Image (cartoon, rainbow, N blue to C red; front, side, top):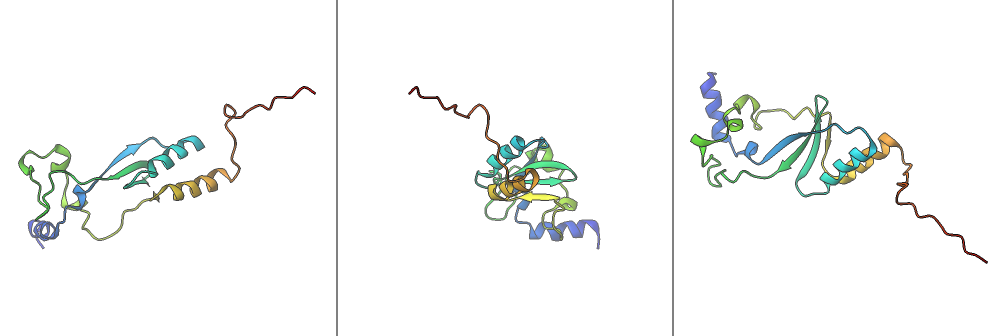
Amino acid sequence: MAKNKAKKILCDKCTGLCCRYFALPIETPEDKEDYDDIRWYLCHKDITVFVEKGDWYINIKNKCKYLSEGDYSCKIYNKRPKICRGYTTRDCDLTDGEYDHELHFMNDKQMEEYIKIKFGNNVKENPKSRKKKKKRKK
């Protein structure tokens, strides 16, 4: 099948999946506190976190305001951002196969379980928050 024909078939089936989210790299967590910060991200609606080829990303489900509701076309196609112009059908979300995520956290509970496994169940109290008991004079 010719390249243009394959592209046409994919584009005809397009529902703008790539225009319904964006993913940004985040710092690789190093300690329990970093993982807990990621757990905080996951407490928010429509957020996931994944690891791909050792790199950590936050995935934000948020539709582009220029995605047409009717035919899923781009309303600013001729003026679309560079990142959109660089997107190819090779990277299309409609292509067969799943993402090759090493880890994929869909919610804060999954991260909480991961933290328990990675760091053990022992929860250490923050020394600054510990209250000293005062001795009463008798």
